[in-house]
Image (cartoon, rainbow, N blue to C red; front, side, top):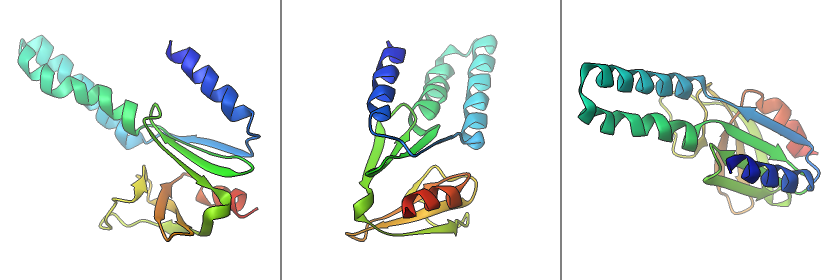
Length: 148
């Protein structure tokens, strides 16, 4: 069923003439997920079934909601999706006021970042002064597609 949903979504995306598409996985979130799965298995082997209720849901939710980050640029929009797509954002290219590649220090507040564990992001400021930091392994390339 999930494959049918993804096929329909990809077909609708393909019809919009994609000029850039990149999917970045956070290795930190992948490691965290594996750690939680291992802890769940250890609790199961130890007979502590009650503890699995607290650990196993996180191992399921982390990759579904926060990993991976998919970014694509069409002729008209910048579209971003986290995980399976519950968190999505679409920004029309005409509404982007400025873009800049930035280094994100660990101590900085990260409330406006979409998956940026590698310390590099693209700062996107829209016409209404909304700021979005979009984590990317190649922010310069993404910036070049947005500037066109």
